[in-house]
Image 1 (cartoon, rainbow, N blue to C red):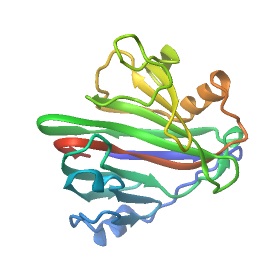
Image 2 (image 1 turned 180 degrees about the horizontal axis):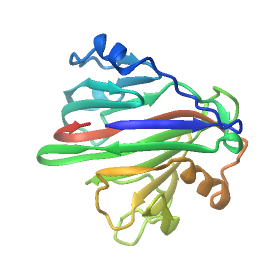
Image 3 (image 1 turned 30 degrees about the vertical axis):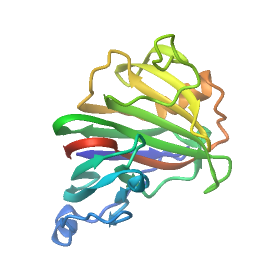
Image 4 (image 1 turned 90 degrees about the horizontal axis):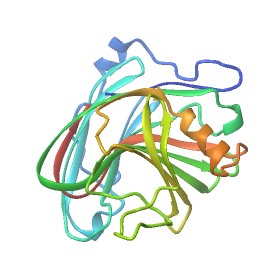
Length: 248
């Protein structure tokens, strides 16, 4: 399950508002969706099948919502990709409200995410939050901030590498939200990318914390401006190759 509980501005108001869970569940679309750009929206959230790199290989990705209760969504995705070397899909839950606020005005982005995954053989993928900032409200992406909860033979974008070819962190053993992270910095050719990966290499299958702490770390230590606007907040899995099912 993935829950973005609150994105609070300087007014400290609750941004998200839902109808009673029973009302949502009566009309909840729990069918499986497999289209390249399929979207299922419930309240302030959307399930996105973002298969932006599908043409770089072969396979498919299907996903479905399974439950909604307040600000908590249950969902699942099954994917099978082969060929090429790039990411094929980022199936995710996206927050649609309370965004386009300057970082200096955000007090918290509380989120809880508990998940499990079954795989068939070796896979290349991650499970990660993905946030984007822009210089103006709703403007072009300037910074991408990823918080990886799991790394399956994938690697973060980095501007520096060790002698053995592995990405070299810009900062190591940084304590945020109850875990310790290595922070990587680089560019994807379009915008800056900052990636937080668990420093011990272990998967975090149950995360609960304030995502705003990662933004505050970047503004205090790696030059991200507090005048940037938070444009996008998502959580999902980037899949490159193999077969897996991610649940809740």
